Image 1 (cartoon, rainbow, N blue to C red):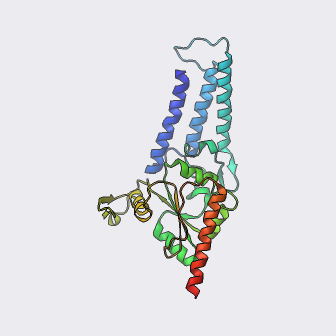
Image 2 (image 1 turned 60 degrees about the horizontal axis):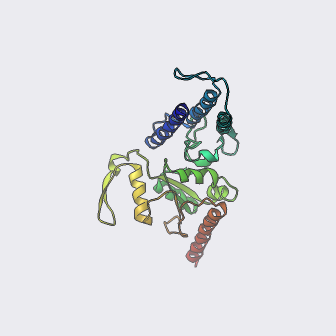
Length: 272
């Protein structure tokens, strides 16, 4: 039991290292390395339970009990499942995402081999002002995605809702996507760093990009949880009620369609 938990502890240690790596932009634990470590740990448990790996305190394994065979089979299946995470996805031109690894593994776009700037190879901005410029130039509504590198539910939305038919095409073709990371530790340029007075009168240091976007979310929408999605017109008008974690594909698609309807209403009013 101690050895099995030791392998599991190594795997989980890489999970926490991965979170820090994403937030700090170190680039030392990309998707490939993370998944390889988890595969090795799962395979190590299988070999240990079969008696192929022994440590100094271990006795020889002469016979496998039924319980030991059961755990061996479980971790063998786990190893096979993790290996499937290295399959190539022609649609996104990166690795396939594994549902059970959403939020545990880094995003598949955080990769040495297939690096992607945005989730699911979508076009996106990480700066609100730049996204607004594009939205005005193309007369498209904005999809504000308040997200986080260490946000489990954010990865579930990006990896299992956004790619679905009826959602992906709307985001890619009808919206300008602005993914704003509230836990980004990259510092802003010195001229943009300042002390902000919140609506409650508190002083807040705006030093990093995460400070900036978390403050924008909290001050504009009075909510601090992620993921959080808001649809805006190119001039910043709210098109429909924002939503948080919405794992139902139909519901999320309806949300995007309501935004397009709201955009049409504004255009009709402007043309009168």
